[in-house]
Length: 119
Image (tube, rainbow, N blue to C red; front, side):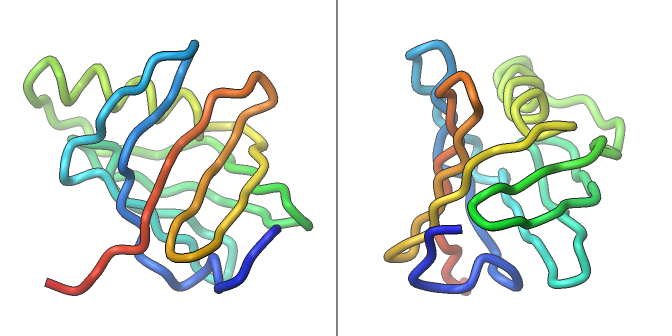
């Protein structure tokens, strides 16, 4: 992991997802937290999720996502499907620096996150 700060134990707010060259802004509820025991949890935009996660050098590998099954408006559900598809069962390259985190797929799609600030 290319890091100038810790990746685990941080509440990350999802800012956007870039897929197939198109940037998709995240709903305000989209969040991610990875703990030191190997669990990722958060919100995909509508539903909460958890998944096993492994960290190895610059690789962040997510296991299958377990999610709640609430329904939201179509925009939030579309974003949730996109984000869940990029994270669930995937190995991504992670780069955390200056309060931002980027998770990049092998195809070049990426999730942009920023450190959440307490409200």
